[in-house]
Amino acid sequence: MPILSSYPFLDVMWTMLVFFLWVIWFWILITTLMDIFRRHDIGGGAKTLWCIFVILLPYLGVFVYLISQSKGMAERSMAQQQAYRAQSDDYIRSVAAQNDPTEQIARGKELLDSGAITAAEFEALKAKALAG
Image (cartoon, rainbow, N blue to C red; front, side, top):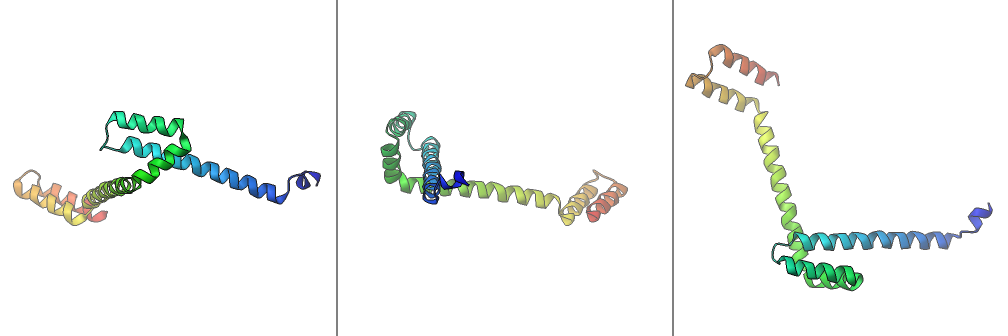
């Protein structure tokens, strides 16, 4: 029991708060650096200057960047999320279209009509598509 009494509850809460703020600080720092490198509207020299500013004067650099570039950060983040969503939707549509039995049968019928496959091959393809 003496171990517990030597570290009071308020000290535990203070340690948790400091740890939480430390994690948040690194999250903000990494987010800021990621946004600097993700930007396409500035060149390498400006990116270098921002990085030097953020590294040499971390708190001031990050807060100045957040204040001056917050609108652009939000727009770039939204554009990136929309691009990821569009890629995901396109992929899902392509995979769903490949597994659609009616699409497979229709493609098989086109191949049959063009003479690329025989009637037996079409029936096998149709049975496979309907089986799942």
